[in-house]
Length: 269
Image 1 (spheres, rainbow, N blue to C red):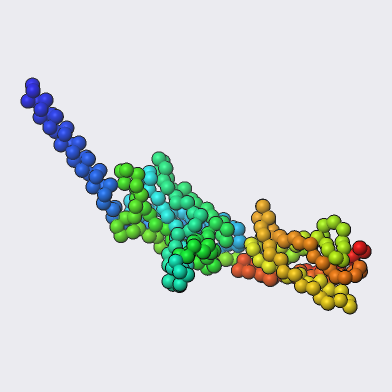
Image 2 (cartoon, one colour; image 1 turned 90 degrees about the horizontal axis):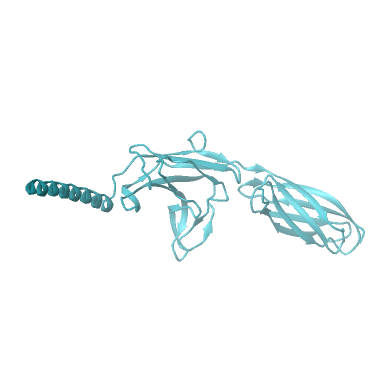
C-alpha cells in the first residue's frame, strides 16, 4: 500500500514538474510569428475620410486562435527625428493616444475606432507632437500574452500588411456675424467655417472708402459637437462711423479648401 502511494505521488510530482516546465518555457520564450490581417474601413482596402470622421480598424490573427490577454498594437509610418531633432527618415511610430486592443475573456477582437486628424497624433523622438498628413500608412502588430500575463512580440514580430488612410478634402463655407453693438473702434465678430476642418487661419479684411484697409488673421478651433471650425475676436473697423465691408476667407489646410464671404457692417457709434 505504501509502495502504491509512493508511486502515485511520484507520478503526480512528475506531471506537475512537466506542467511547470512548460509554463516556464512559455513564459520565457517568444511565440512563433503569426500571419496578421488589418481591415481598415468598411471594404478593407484602406479608408477615405474627412476631418473628424471615424476610421474603423478590425485586426485579426489568421494563423492562430487569439487568447485572453493578447494585444493588437497600432503604428503609423511617418518622418521621425532623434532626440536632438535631427531627421532619421521614415519610421514606424506608435500612435500617442491609441489604446491597444486587448482581448478579454471572450476571446473576441472588437473593432477599434479613431477620428481622423484628432486621435492620430504621434510623439517624435525629440518630444514634438505631430499629426501625420494623409495619405499615410498604418499597420498593427499582434502581441501574445504569456502565462504570467506579460505581453510581448512574437519571434519574428507579427505585423499586418500596411493600409493607406486618405483624406477627402472639404469644400468649406464661412459665415460672418457680430455680437453686441457695432462700433467703429471695436466690434465683436464671430466667424464659422463649415464643415469642421480643424485648426486653420481665417484672414479678415476691413475696407471703407477713404480709409486704409485693415487685415486680421484669426485661428480657428473646433466646436464641441465637431460641426464647425470657429473664431471670434473684437476687431477695430476704422476711425469713423459709417458702412464697412468686412470680408473673411478661410485660407485652407490639408482638411479643407479656402472659401470667402463678405458682409456690409454699418457702425453708428
